[in-house]
Length: 333
Image 1 (cartoon, helix red, strand yellow):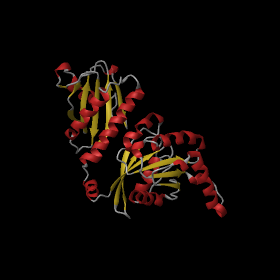
Image 2 (cartoon, rainbow, N blue to C red):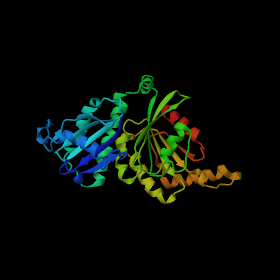
Image 3 (spheres, rainbow, N blue to C red):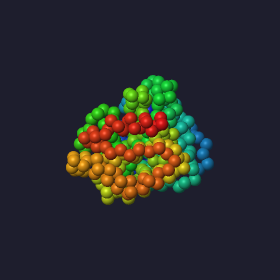
Image 4 (cartoon, helix red, strand yellow):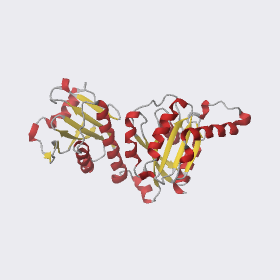
């Protein structure tokens, strides 16, 4: 499975002062590690003598497998100015990804769109797009894990797409569901995209949670991750009403996509612990709050799909047990 993707950019790879390095989701390669960087680019210091793929627009080298400093890498060079590299788990065979890697480079680099590699946001978007597609390929095509294979064979493997604005509690929810643990400030809003596998014991199902970054610059990639989802899970920070309008806009941008019609939906209103409702009329107050949220997000307009709204507090573990059971109920109903 792919762990990281990186990009080197420079006029001359030999001059590290001119080299810019980008990576996703973590900064695994540092410009200060000169030996590692030089070993990666050594393959591409031969200029035009490197074997190349046919291309009408740019020169793209054939991908090369490299194992350096315990990093299992698969790299390719574009016009002797850019190196794109994939980093896999140690036991993976990079050549399993040859076709998808070459296809994505052609689609992204030679699709007629002018990509500005001088714009950091565009570079970030390129890397996350490739990462998602390659991760999906590994997750759904190669199916390396014997545990995942086992559940695929039993038709009990389901993909859950989890999205929402940053800092609503998505990654904390997945961690709580998987480990039962919550730690204050364990997660901060990041660019990290992740897939976590959680077993739902009651239905004997394996759930693959696609936890997507909520930062604005990455939301255009949500629809790529949504493909082949069995259920959509949308998370709201109900204590931050200042972002309701922004959250509503992103919610309907996804829900209105025609390709997603009929896919069941779970809406999670997180951070209910921040509301100090008196115990004597707790249910009444929460029903009022639910009506207000429904009105703010126009939930009455949801059509052509089964959907459920749940209040949760990932911090206090409130209603967390119902999340998995509701997901499996919606998928199987």
